[in-house]
Image 1 (cartoon, rainbow, N blue to C red):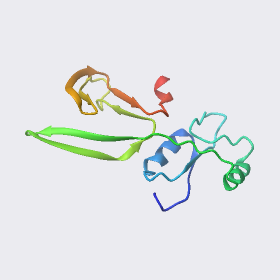
Image 2: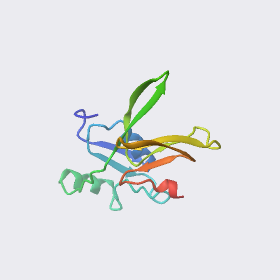
Image 3: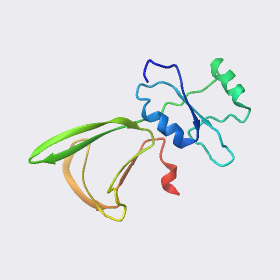
Image 4: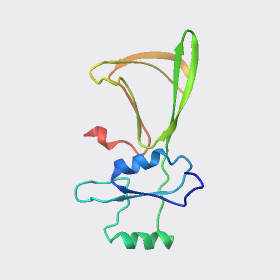
Length: 141
């Protein structure tokens, strides 16, 4: 989306905002509009209790405060027949990355190393959750 648009607007809730953010790699400003604030908190969405027209007026007048958010790039490493391959996922994660088994009843066996420092460590667990500063409140219940 970089360079194509001046603004990305998602209408829905946080899930819709996150889905729109998947294709927004280039840093185009993104505005989330919570369409059902009575049932959904919409923590990533703008508060427009004064109405959508007022939100647009504030946006046009430059009276809108943008909150930059950190994103995570994910690279997958695999070894097959002694050959290691690295694949970078095309999406940037906005709130979290979960690594684990597709079947949640199975334990995950993960080999981890942070920032290429130290030896690989093997862990048997339910999975690994890595959050950005945005966090992932849905995992907390």
